[in-house]
Amino acid sequence: METGYRAGEPGYRRVCLALFTAGVATFAALYSTQALLPELATAFHVTPGQSSWSLSLATIGLGVALLITGPLSEKVGRTRLIHLSLTLSALVGLACAVAPGWPALLALRFVQGVALAGLPAVATAYLREELHPSFHARAAGLYVGGTALGGMTGRLLSGAVSEPYGWRWALAAVGALGLLCALLAAVLLPRSRHFAPRPSAPATRRALTDPALLSLYGIGACAMGAFVAVYNAMGFRLTSDFGLGVAAAGAVFLVYPVGSLSSALSGRLADRYGRRAVMPFGCVLTFLGLLFTLSGRLPVVVAGVAVMTAGFFCVHGIASGWVPVRAHAAGVGAAQAASYYLFAYYAGSSAFGSLAGTAWSLGGWPAVVLLASLFVAVSGLLSVRLRQVPVLAPPAPILVRPHRAG
Image (cartoon, rainbow, N blue to C red):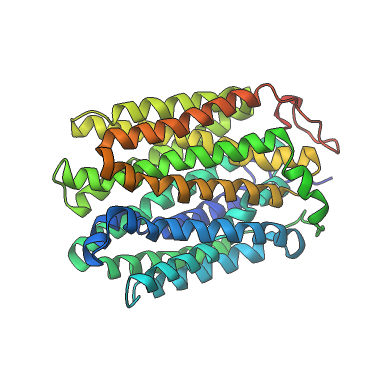
């Protein structure tokens, strides 16, 4: 009886590489304007807080669309939505480069967020269905590593292109990257072998009442809010406090591979020691990184951002891979639960991350760190609470140790 691809098999490598590539495209597009916030504020004569809406509206569109695409994938399948999402989001990204004004750019960014929803809504559900249970957390960590690399690529590419050529060419470059990644994913991603259409409505109540899932949703919202708050304000700090240009300030995103390594490593540790044991450590690591960024020395600040990034991707990598596993054990549609998690995740990004501009204007960098630390503290408390939530046995026997089930 087939139990899914195992590490070392060609199908496993194709799945991981395809979703890694798709993660790069999706999150390069999503965060393509973050390194451009100071330039957009100058070009359109808006405040730092207003410029952050070019990112917040994309995450709002993504979050809202996730509530539709996740349940929809339970009926129409995973791979179809992934391919459609990658292609449409890249095309809208190219349209952003020729936006005639600030309102048009914001509207297109919202539409791009909606188009981006297809991949994150189904990626972890696809992994749960197509891979052997022993490798779920590891593969989820690799996928989140791709999203980390994508976030770095979008920020670095847009920052590097914008300085000599302007923000329009920067967004066009990210759009072209998206089209290339969409082509690669179309060639690499295997068709679903274990997907079975199912109605998602009857499971809605359990997806919104299970204590472990609710805690995971809260962790996603608060951890992402802290993370985006720091990165939204960091460009303003580096250009004003340290006198760096847009491209040089964007180089801070070179720490993103630390997130890729952290998510992959935390997935392996979670497979060995259990998710409940590893997640609180990620919260502590995130908080320590925030403290380092208070330094007045640039190398220490960059090191702090790297540590914070490692901690965040440890938390998010474990939480995002845990949600479909817990949902399956609770009898909830995996994609539906993943959609709720990601809705909370991007709602936190939009609501909490946009507060960073206000915090920066009111109290400078210490105010940003205080804001982010509050969100990290909530994530830490919820991760400790998860250790007290009873484990659920899966509805059907699978080859996985009980402490990893949910």
